[in-house]
Length: 143
Length: 418
Image (cartoon, rainbow over all chains, first blue to last red):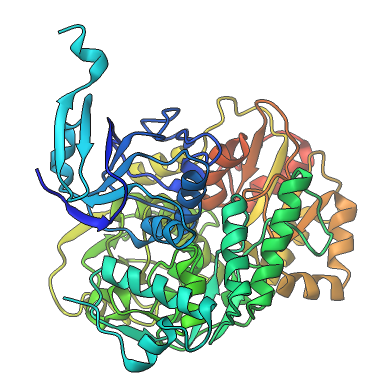
């Protein structure tokens, strides 16, 4: 399928991480580890680093971009970010990272209804906004 | 719709005011394109949330603007930093982080921002006019500015706030358009006990519920029995903006764009009506606490958003000269600290065991002692939301009176009627 490109960036092939609740990056994601730190979040403890992060929504603090910029510069950013709707508060982190000369992950827009089909799969994200779904490499061995 | 820049805006982007201003304008324009804004609008002021240290990259960004000769084009107050520059409180930041946090705070001053260092700039003399367009950051400041002052701002995140302040323009979308300020949801509290609605904890608990229920929708609170104080609206907005993505709320008969429910709805039918019940309130209150055990606390923290002078007066009256068994951290800005020091209030509070924290707060920088499995008691819906993730402390929620009694006794106590 083809998604709208919100912020152009590097293509990626990575496992999908589908969040089942909105998240505040500030206070919700640890910028030093990439793990979800919000104890009330259903995916608490999982790492978003290197994943195709599918966000049903973002909430809370206006410092989300700072956390995302920090993740990008530390090499801990998601491999790509798929959002239900554009979120300036979060994606500013990518826009500023580009201004600072860093390669950034792609940010795409897709209806959150598509996210359930991504869970447990590997996604290939192309520069043109294409999204290809394949089973996770580790799961292929068992099938 | 493609973004159109005016000749003046294009000239800034091309470097007419230097490379720093050009970078700021590029960031504003990129955001406008992202959000589908057709143009930029001039802004009257900004409140900057970007001077809080989250890592070295934020400091490098601010210093890059300084090196590019950037200066703010409008009044710009600063939100909290990571350091208490007044010396009231100490923090445990390691030396590298402390140095980078200091460089970051210095860089924002260099850009021409006011060293207000508060998350309650609206109580520190920065109150933009009704209907004016501004670019504010910090979720509670945004929601207060939109809702209580009736100035128009989107939720400006870190980097975009300072970029707008330097450029003097903001993307024209969202809450800058009057039609997007219409309430679509009625949040009806008329079924609640008036005794609860008049209590101290009502507004933070309602705010937390409102944020979870509304998400980023605009709602109007209907059916209140008593006019809330400014500090109550401050607590409601802060709790709502931590639990949801709330940027604007109306309270019928109270906030300036809602003389009544129909006006807040722009005389259109609501898309939803939420009838708030006592069960929803009890659930919302329960969710504010995370601590597994309700029999001990290591500390109390209040002041998110920063305490006003009225709140300090209430704190002092509740303590009534008694000594506290566990420390009570009272977070505030210089605007209140100056007044507090004028009448000896700071000294009296510190003699009781209060630790005044200025310029910053205990949830954004490591001020609380590093204790395993420690529990923090707070009256702030916002602290209750963020303390577990940011400090590692479990949280017990209570009113300011309950917080003070608990600090005096050294264990959590609750009023029977609460």
